Amino acid sequence: MSTPAPSSFRITTAPDLVYGVWDAERFETRSADWVQVPGAEVHLMLGQGWPSYGAQFVATFSAEALCSDNDKDGQGVLQATVFFGDTQAEPVSGNHRFVTARGNPEWSSHTFIRTVRFEPDSAVRDVSARVKLKASGAEGGVQNWFLKIERFSL
Image (cartoon, rainbow, N blue to C red):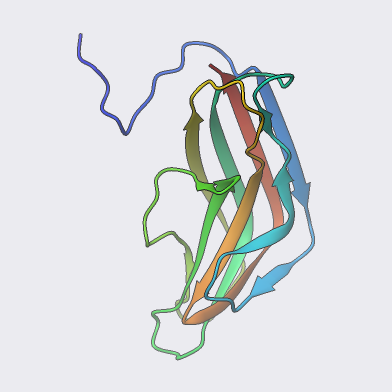
């Protein structure tokens, strides 16, 4: 039997908890820095007195998204990811293209999945999940979004 690579995990049980939050409101940004989508947050704690000392979290984010190219060169992108506390969930890269500016911008549905693991520790930690966007050479936004967090206690 082979050992899974560090970029994988195996879960043999259903999640301990599943959280969901959604909103229909439109949020748009031109920011080149990560900005939180208002309301796209799930409060999560680890450690003494909380549901678990450690956990593997799996986040799924789905939204209708739009991206308009500022320079009209077809290179503008709206990036999206999820942070758990100050930790950006995997996979981490400098290229989180959620939606790309191409032709006449139209709202279209997009989804991503991210994961993070926090090893067991009795210290209380706030690892709340927050969806963040940033624009690169573009302006863009999301609406009718849904964030689901699955918690697998360690």
